[in-house]
Image (cartoon, rainbow, N blue to C red; front, top):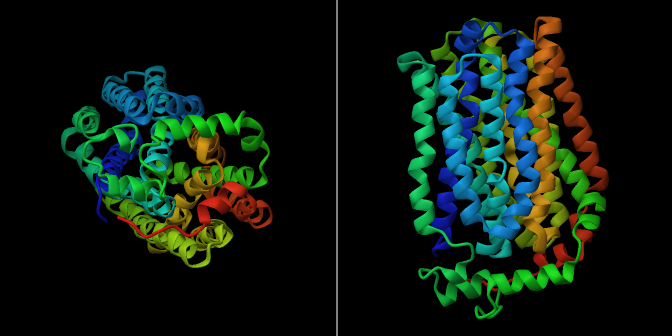
Length: 436
């Protein structure tokens, strides 16, 4: 991979790792927080879900904000605020403060993925987008894989308050590198060559800047809302992404508690076992990003390249939960959950690529809509799970609900998800010249 655009992808990967370590860290501090603040499972669920409440607001409006202000400015402010909110968690002395800083964290992290989609749309050629998104998005499970043992050991060794202060510093360290190395469009960066620009623009003269091209596309597209809110493919994609989000936030928030309470593990062992599902997800997500673009290159069919990875991954994820529900053994639970998370996350880049393919002039807004579904799941999954655990005293009902949601998403994608029928997507799938 040559060209400065891949340095930008590297910066996206780093901040995504920081993003997810920050948002998942509380799961490993819930034990001491629960004892200190006398929280019951329902309150724990509400604290974990507070992130989703804040995330919902800025995920939707963050997409519009990114389209108007550009990812360099938006991502910088976002990282600054969420780093401060993570550090502020160290000051928690009651339920209200804890809920508030988690909601602020969600508000600040909301524009992260709309910014990523805008950068990919402006900085990568169409056939590289799923690969670039795959590497940007692989930061999610990679962060959770390394974060599980890292954060759990920090809690054990230095305490949960110091852990949050240390994590809050990470985003602040990334910020100057982003400001120095990033511009909203490649035409404005001195390290992007004319050859690279021609490759990114698929032969369009680089004198036609990204800003000019985007303004022209927006004028031609008119109001985006009818397309974004009525297109069956986008709606099926949004629902599947909600279910993906439910799975992710379910395990992100509750997996350490599940392992600790159901199998009586100490926090150090919880951190080690909790890293395994995210290891599976890291490998499968990276591989599927390449596979999606390879299928598109070989077949030119977006149904095969985007829809099939989504429904197959969700189906395999749901099937992997069956032994977890039916057999109460630690090794079975860890393997089943690892497969469920790995398969569930495998097609993550395909969800994002569908928005770029179908709404090239409104990628930030389209992603804002999709990520709003995801953000709502970030509130619903932890909160509902908390109430189910409190009502039943275990996780059986929570796993059954997750399995039913995965099945509904598989059916929705099979019936309604047809990206190949959209003119903009068909144009994106046409052969391009080989380049940088």
